[in-house]
Length: 105
Image (tube, helix red, strand yellow):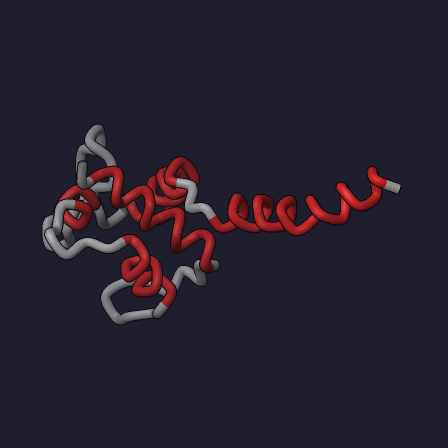
């Protein structure tokens, strides 16, 4: 009976750990997506040779004094005229924003 009570007491903790891990942004996944979807216009990595000169690099975006990953992720979810609507999920937008944050360092 003690085992069952211990299990029941730890169950909420297990759910919160799993939920937190699922919501964490994955910069490595963001890098993969950036190289696939964003590199046609943006310089997305230091080793990239060419991008559109009228479009900011990910490094310059990440270095902005007011840079905020959460705000960028929300921006990426909202279609806007200068960028194609990529139909990103919230997780994908967070992953891209996390990657861009690493480029500003």
